[in-house]
Image (cartoon, rainbow, N blue to C red):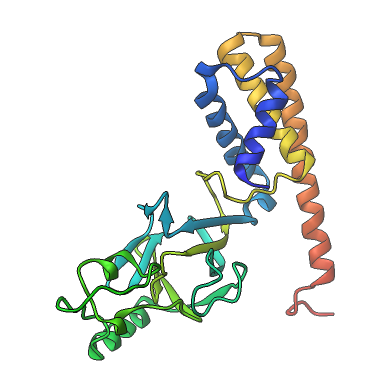
Length: 265
């Protein structure tokens, strides 16, 4: 489910009559704290992180997406990237068959990215004309639409590309067009969530753990109810222990199905 759905479910379960207006932000912060806490103790909960970044946000360029020459630049996640691809929200665009058409990017070195840029510069693809009418494309990156350029400067969605990590940033080449979204699947510690980020919240134990965390924090900080705090804390710790045990069992089963090839038989 999405982070927004998880928040809505937990808030309605803990506060069936509605969250007090003055505590709305506090409760959201508790939910984030609960997810971070689960990642620390349940390794399996670090393996299903998905970050989706839209190039456009609310009709303007997303501040999370920068550009360097003809590459898109975003902050790198704090972990190991398993898969990186793009999706297109406009299925009518050139080179897009549907909004679910994934374009996968291969990991390269930052040197490869720089060589690709130099190759583009050598072919004059990076020059923007100032004496021609603007491109009619509505999905070009913003700095292509600025001023004027020839029709040959109109960019289409790339069939594939490359990405590299450098100084905690990801460089994606060629850059994304405005209707695209970048999707990163990775493993590691995640500390911030957007409403449309995917979370493994379908697991009842995950929702139970988050709900108990919010309950105990609220009982301690706002109700000053030590008895309720102690009960919710005990239940939360038991739930986390069960999640750790289940994660261990999954790892054991995985090793039985996919044994270490270097282990002697």
